[in-house]
Length: 274
Image 1 (tube, rainbow, N blue to C red):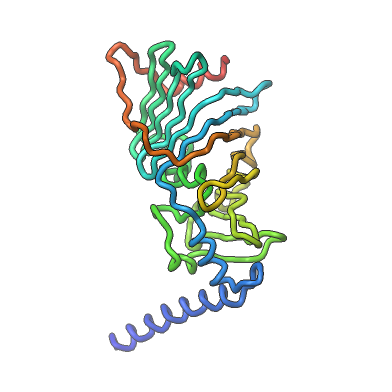
Image 2: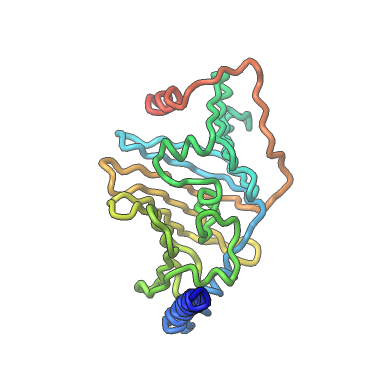
């Protein structure tokens, strides 16, 4: 009986894999089969180790006027996302460091800082946000939650379907949260990422536009993140310029003993008052 059970399980697994492959094979996108298209999208997705850019940030919290600031952004894959504000003769007045372990915000003008674990931030936002997901959103990459990097063998982990002039890629097997990616049917570039709560109207849309040449491929100069389904629409706009892949910068941050630690609530109140 055990042998029959194991044989039955093996048949189910093989049938499932075969069905997945056939579904991709029978889908046509941009003149390619689904399997070929998915493998190309993954192959063309760059895995940049470093990215630097000048950025114009505009945060809309649903209040009367948005908050705008010019900043520098630096990313080192798997290590840090850093945003610094230095409006006066290049003198830094504020810094946000996001690492896989924590978020650190430093206000140098008032000698204050906020520090909280990434897990705590995820709980506050009531979502399964992690460093790799945020990194992929900014770096214009498709991803699978919990994975640091994709390979061509991951093609079968996505459902694929035509969507106008785009292709819609959906990560399979997720429970609470859905991950969808909309790529160009002609060249495979990622044009929009949608993270949504299943069965609820809440979602985060990240849209990419104004692509420019960066190395051997392209990168968006416009990144727009916007909530949908909420009472108020929250959005973050990033307009990038001077985009480089420089690695000659220090990823460490030190906090002076003269700085006072404040809570995230205090920081948000300061931002809202601006």
